[in-house]
Length: 311
Image 1 (cartoon, one colour):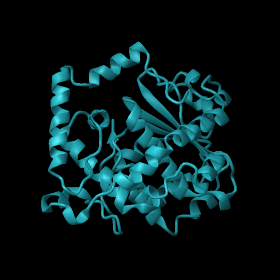
Image 2 (cartoon, rainbow, N blue to C red; image 1 turned 120 degrees about the vertical axis):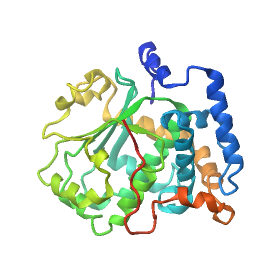
Image 3 (tube, rainbow, N blue to C red; image 1 turned 30 degrees about the horizontal axis):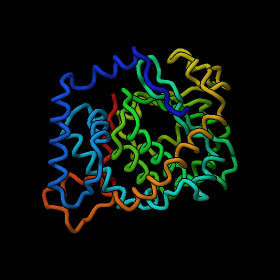
């Protein structure tokens, strides 16, 4: 199973973040629906359940939710390298699953957080595709938006087997990293608690410095680097939620990675349909929406990397 439901205690924590009055929640959804109806450039096929998850992850701020909805759809047109050809059966997506483990652990932490793991399976630099990995990450985020509420996210990046060559491969073209940050950091309504780096190599500080202009300070303050492996995590979470290889009970890396591959393949029809439906019509965009759409400057210069919900 890819995502287990919250325990009663975890659900109680989540419920505290929802408006206590169901009528108020419905009223907020109606307000968003009315706003969408007045944005002729935006698609208007999003259902109420997904709107409710957007609103929850934006901490119930309607104005914040409008901004993220605007960006969520804008990048789907403006960043085609990540949002076109999203067929789960395509070769680049299948290759990505074979070369990089990226999955969400089934169980929430006691705090109600999801744990995301990313690690190399194949260390061959020539086979590593950053673009395919980002595309896959965004596909998994879309599935989560359809399925669940969670209070925040913990990302674990295991750098074992990585080399400077993996990073120098795209340092000369930092624009793809910037565009990936726009797609993931600025345009998806997810909260982030922290990012743990395991088996951090000696060169990681230099790499972070190279990409520092693309990372907001509040995000980098969430970074924690460890020379060791999974045992470093035991003080931060119950190890039972972790993969078997890390002393937990969640399943093996192979099983967890395969489960998410199967999950996105089962949602193939949705991805193919979404590619046609979730596009904006720039010609229909009203003048007042231009200032809020992408102060992010997709094509170059510095952009505005400000909008990740960080607890």
